[in-house]
Amino acid sequence: MFLLTPIIAIFGSLVLVNANSQHGWVQIPRDLLYHGGSDSLLYVKIIVGVVIFLVVNVIFQLITFILTSAFGPSRYGPLDVPPVSYKGPKKSR
Image (cartoon, rainbow, N blue to C red; front, top):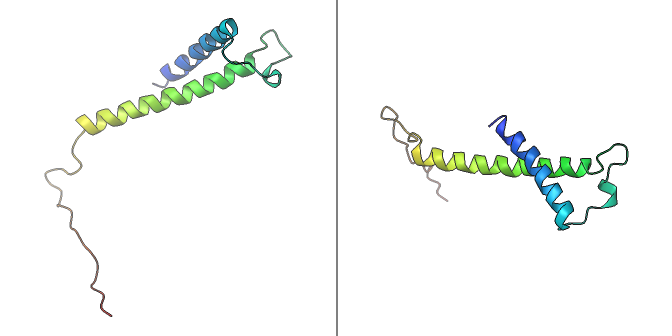
């Protein structure tokens, strides 16, 4: 997961930015264009990559949570003392 998530984010951002330039789904503001080098969409690719990274991370965490809750060990083992329901001292007025 340590290597898979950033690789998915990088390739996903490249695919989405190239598809956006072909189909024109979203107009990119001029403030996000990089004027110093050959790739003018560098900032856009970085932002989209970070967003994809976070989304993929959340999806993997949800899958891990579901699998752990379904197939993981029980909360209490056979040697644990059963939980006690304690309501506190009685208060009288």
